[in-house]
Amino acid sequence: MTFEPERLGQSRSDLAEALRGQRKRAGKTQTWLARHCTMSQTKVSNIESGKLTPSLVDVELILEALGVDSPVAAEILSLARTANTEWQDHWSSRRRGLDKKQNELARIEAVSTEFRFFLLSMITGLLATPEYVRASISDVPGDQSKT
Image (cartoon, rainbow, N blue to C red; front, side):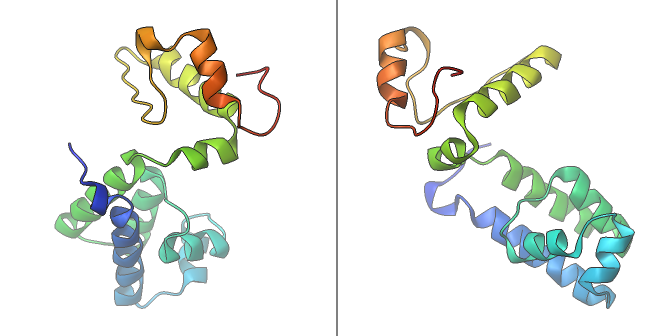
């Protein structure tokens, strides 16, 4: 799967529009949908506005609650997979904290049999000497001792 730079982020808005369209076609409110998916109405609103990228499980719950037929559901799930695997800018990693990203990767690595991760904002491999890594994260605010 390849991504075109001008399309990055588009799948999230396409996904939001598709889910909102399906809910409206079903004639349901956000409150009704939230109740049937055990989510808050705010979460449903944020998903439908594109502020929040829903997990695949969230999308499956929404589609099941709305009774969306298989061909349309498969298309929407494809959008959800794309939205969840797109490269996210390095500012989003910094906002969360680099140590949290490292912990997340460690959990994934612990349960994986095959693991590939491409960190586009930093040179990896043999070129990532300790000095280079320290210089790369020196402008990140907060305590870097955990990183």
